[in-house]
Length: 202
Image (cartoon, rainbow, N blue to C red; front, side, top):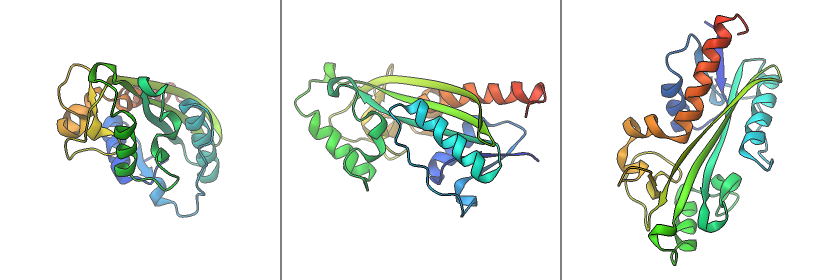
């Protein structure tokens, strides 16, 4: 069976992406299966460019069809922060807890109706360094005053998606995987993969 490399070592993220992409006629593998692939520095100014850079470099390093994404949180009251720095918002060695603590602290004087935010995700598909396609997804919502819930990762405990009263971390993967930014971006990519496979490009 042909393989597609999901360019992440995060097992939670890998499983989430795998659920969204299913079913496709490819075996999904992660960077955890490849010990000799160097870390790609995500130093671009946009999510799209970071996704493209990582997909291109990983596909060249492994010779395997590769998918990479870059995603993060944009908060209106913070002029779009943390943006591309979402994963390292509090420090270079940031943890989810530290990032959330910093975010909540910055918004402590911002009223609920001014806490608009959106999760953004860009996905890139590459083959041996050549970009075949990009897709994106957005999920709009609001930031809470404190973390709630035990599911998910990242900023899930403080993000309430539009139309809901609970955070992603409270709603759980069953709901999140149907409405999230990552779901929307990877669902589009799944259709791209199926189309490219039908026309014998993959």
